[in-house]
Image (cartoon, rainbow, N blue to C red; front, side):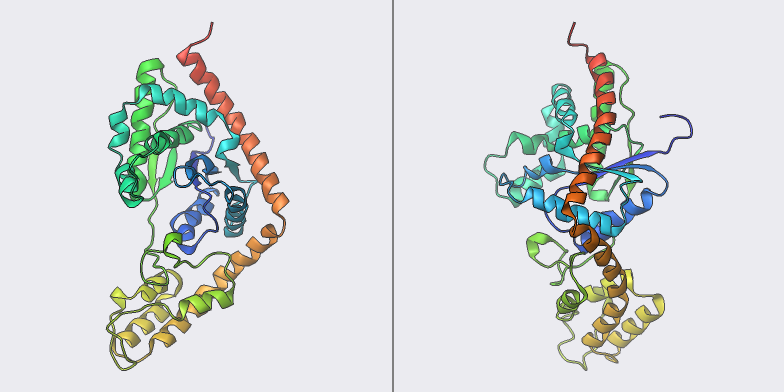
Length: 330
């Protein structure tokens, strides 16, 4: 990278539909900040979606919905390259070459491989599932980024990527710099049932939700189970609603809610109403920006195709270096 050039960053999401609050706070907020100072590449990981479900009928629509959320959250296609993985076929070529230098045992020890087999009760996991961390390595190394922003649970994937780069470089010559993890501090974002917010639990607050829908989801949220009656004191430290207060509510009102909960001075609905007062304005602003893009799906597709052309230019330059190093053809 030329002297004075911005550090490059790469990250992606599977197109599983609309972005919820957990996705936004865990990744998108950070992505938006990074585009201010870094050369950012953010991609739709559509090939990775096949490791979950081979029915692709929803993927194109989910991609458009997800991009509307990204744009509503503040990603700017003028300042970040937004692209679709499968529109840059060089990713598949690099994955193939990495598969020749990477021991199977490295992939079998990736923690999420065993977790996915157990969670999905897979008797015969696919080659694609075993190899998806290696495709992830190809996704990352293609753009020779300085940083990969991830939560701590994804750090092993970046460490594998560093090992893959090292092995390839030792075999064929120095092509890939080893990227570093940029750990993203992910706040605890509970779903409406108190469990981790997840589409699979159907407990999400989505960026596309309007104020009425968010209110309808928040008001019946579970709280401290000890507060069976209005007069029972509670413990905000174990209350999912208070986890959201920590994200959205200013300190003075947080303290008011915590004290009121502990002393039974306020009821749970009073607490939730204060949360909504602070939560709704920023989410409404995101939704309104999102809506502008959602009403123009052709523009979203255009942004993705333009971003994919830009990404492919970088990928083709990388693969020129890779092919020269591997030196297969006369």
